Length: 324
Figure 1: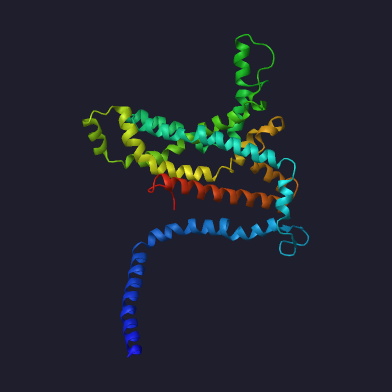
Figure 2 (figure 1 turned 135 degrees about the horizontal axis):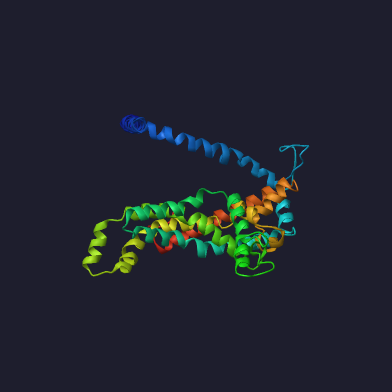
């Protein structure tokens, strides 16, 4: 009797599962073009992000180029102990954290402010002109920007030198690119100029989804423009701001190799040497691939912890925010 009951239940479940499978495949066939469009992105992450992950093992080996990857000696955590005791690592870590905090405090809010200001513009032609103008620097490489900054601040041939000479100044002008006191500020300001405009794209798209009736209701209640921004626009941007903040905090140790590498020089190494440039030198100048891999793995683990911690705090503050 029990066997017959079990068979009956199984027979009743099977058609349900079969129906679910047919529905899933029907949905996939219906959206096959969308899945086909996703194939290049999936392949990109597989080829350049997931398959190379086996190279993480290099952080736990004493790599010998003649023995090869798999035959090199396994040494466990010795590379990490060596890395943390190396000259310059503490300085690079400290500079990375300081510059990242500067970027977070001063650069992160700028796209939010710009997007709100752009949203309040009523002259469409002028709005498009401003948007295009602030988007363009994003598509300029840091190498070109470094050339522009050198042409402006060079103490011998720069624009500032020429302007000072026009007004009667003689002698050498202040070299901002070689100033330890101001170089970090230069990194932050140049990053804002390059990326802040393009960073408004997502915020403007979010603002466009806010129900206009909420603005009308606020006007009826007597809310002025700043009150509408505070009580309608910013709450509408809250989830987007939190998610981007989580990503930003998670990438605090990724200060930007291309920017720093293009702008820094030996006179400002003390305040500008970051983990990215430190890893670059370990790998490509000293050929210490195992130590460079250990440093990269250290960055990745810390970034993961920061993402999870920031997401946890965001969930505690607002259950609708966060990633997970």
